Length: 297
Image (tube, rainbow, N blue to C red; front, top):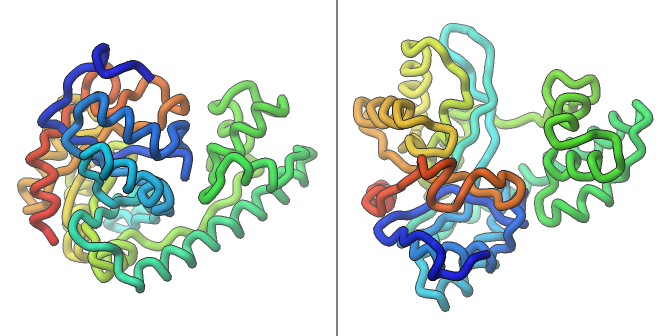
């Protein structure tokens, strides 16, 4: 990491989407807090996949540094497309800006993590059935509290079964790969309800990744999720051009949903994505959006 003198000053901005070594990032929680502090971000939200472990580890470090840390998490769901168009994988961000998650949510999260590990066991069996000799222990040593396909990818590359992460997903881990094993994710509307019942603020993450080309279908999907209790859309994201950011902001305004934003920082895993700045400085999340997030609770 660079020292603060060589970093841009991001006073007045926040980053509400980033990952640590507790899931699939390369920065430890303490290192991430140090980087956010050096950038002078007003606030940070650690949104690791399926776990609060990174947030808990970062909390005392952030308090000592005087950095506001928002409790968050990123969850995978299946979203039914309107009109019987099948389903898409939808990532849901859940924020707890003013209250800790209720016990019912924590219990539900424990069950979700158990399902992830069962999928990993089946994925190992699928790979081994094709002569790909890797062990679950090797992958879990990288994944720590949450082990997912990015950690499988790193082991596959390290052992010479793939040239890089893209190759590993194409040949073994992606949805079209012969060894792919799907994890049964809850429906998006169901997960929105679970987050709300746990005291959280559910927000659709990086909606561009849903790849919905028909604006009417896209709008209907957001309307149905709002009816289920959705409270926000991540309008600002590293994957979103200025045009897309304006598009999702307009949808949020039209439906009375809040807007959030974040870089989706992973460190060395996604080296072109900078904390608080995204790709080529396409991310700037005003601190005022964080106040809107808190106003929903």
